[in-house]
Length: 372
Ligand code: ZN
Ligand code: ZN
Ligand code: ZN
Image 1: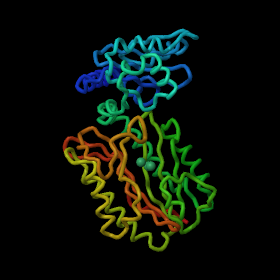
Image 2: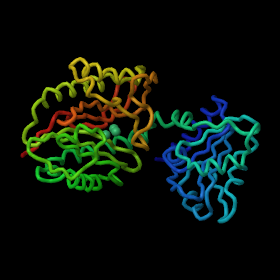
Image 3: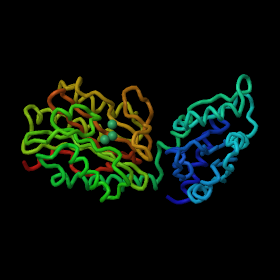
Image 4: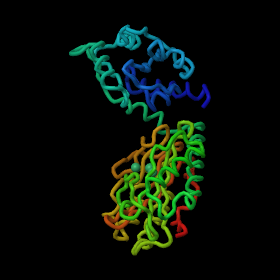
């Protein structure tokens, strides 16, 4: 990403703060800090915080020994270093400036509790205390809608994970354990540009019915259905894609359920466009699965936003009346889970475009039969 784009995020957050009567937000290491400044800080007992103020007087407060990396990594914000042994909270308090009693100050969701407690001691309590709130209410406004660089990053991550799925015929073989297949997938992810495998779900046979099963020592056999849900960061942007495989042949009852799931996922993707609600995308998938009698087996929301984190807003779930806008990116991943038998989930990442959607995963969503 370019410097221009990163400083734009900080300017956008200023505007959101001003419109909501928020004085400042205090952000620790994590995805919010990367989104606003580009700086990939590590969290430690020496606090690193971005103080972003509605009046544009921002500061990145860092320990002196990390000042060089902060200056190199952070764009559009002055770095204020505190010496080893000095009180970081005095520096953070100065960066916050004179707050009126009851001023609204947002705290990053991933700021360490110890840092918040130190900050609260510094800036007073009782009548003069600020009104603290979760800064995600503010940062979500910037992070939910991706700019061109973010969309490009997610597109490249999608292409990388698609390539790993194309190799599944070599990676996933009967006689191997799920754990070994997971290791082979992780190596393939590294080969395609992933910095790491954030998760490698290989759910074979009955294990597929547990949506967040990772891997186990179960040996994959001919006749197994296998759910493969894999993802990780490529240049900081996350991939996340689920496809379904059977070894040799599908188990009894599988094909009927898969046809329903396939239709449901296609209906939900087709529904994605600006102006519809997140809840309506969930409903588009759920109606198909309910109508076929598998409603009780679809036990999770239809999707989650994705970007610098694998799960972020917007959540594609019943009750979320958020209206979709161009630039929003999220998964569409309905599933059917039959305990003791098998499970299945089809997952694509999609981006909302000006007049519809773009699938960022482009491999076929059909069931793949691998040789026995
Ligand atoms: Zn999940
Ligand atoms: Zn997934
Ligand atoms: Zn997902």
